Length: 458
Image 1: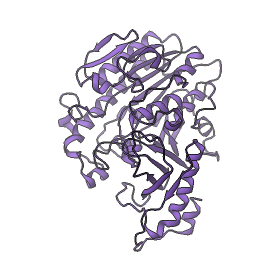
Image 2: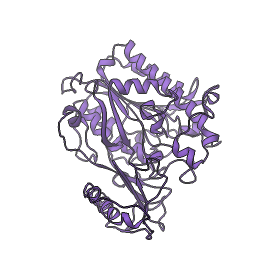
Image 3: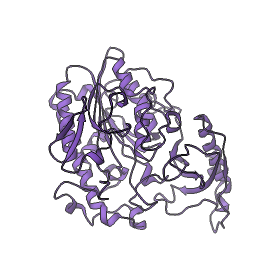
Image 4: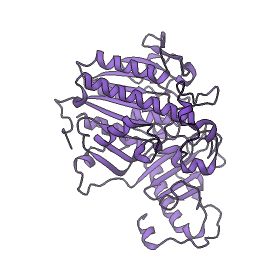
């Protein structure tokens, strides 16, 4: 699989390329025919492509905290937006910094209490060129961030280009010493104050009225209003990703730099609730994810389920650094080292949903099971003692989640088994003891569940 993972005396550079609100099916590797992400697709095919990558938190702040700390929102207390990263939390920047890496953060933070982000709320990063809420401080052609001295900096160009330019300058200036760079974009997130997805000039027209993912084609939402601009943002973001890879190649750093591309959550274009994420559905939780660089070249397509929580320990172990026991995910390194052999791995991903609801969900290879507390406030209630079944989807027969099976009598035993697994995850994260109330019963029609299908869930 190419060059081995790093050891103590062999420290690769590490770059995280982090997009915002990016659906997994923007990639040709996930069936998109519009060639929106050729640079990602090429990198993923050359390196290691995580075909079933799921966020553990389908909303910005908690997902970002999870990727910095490797811990759930219920563990860090950052379970919704507008909650700063607690000062005692150890981040990737702390761990890489202690290993004598230069650490840098560029772009959107969303884990501070204000803009400019105070020094004590920056997660331990040495170099800082960021905004807490980039969607507020910046617009498509006016990218305003703040430096380490809290001075306002206007970066020229279209916003994602401006962030990429800053990243390339950082890589060039730090190429002679090991560095960990976290590069965080706002694209392709909507522009809050106008409720639009603003692409570069001329890009919306390229994609308006073209291929529509089947869930959006069936459910509508704001698809026809927004998808052309969204695709244009995705295209330009991928072009920036290609320029960053080109810079690594020109500086002779490709063989000594691990690159991770992933996103915090997807976008369902107001088809599942009144906005774009904060739901259990694939359009909210599934994201494009791939690695390249030392240890990941030639890794191929990985079909196992991977959560956002698994990426921090993977980066650390791949760089030869210890993984703190407090991290709640699992490093992919043993799985990748032993490709072709039977290596134990998780068969579900646990998801915490906030703001729109106080909810919990389980994503297996075949099933999606989600519960919520209808009497709770998703902004104030971090957890609940009583949840009600809300969604059950058969992802094999219904990959676009158009038929909710919650309460269907033929699936009662399946729901009971999935509820038991979900409660086990809650207990493992120290959440309060809870009950799950079954959904109201509904006739099965011709549906039934085979015994072997139930056995696969037990």
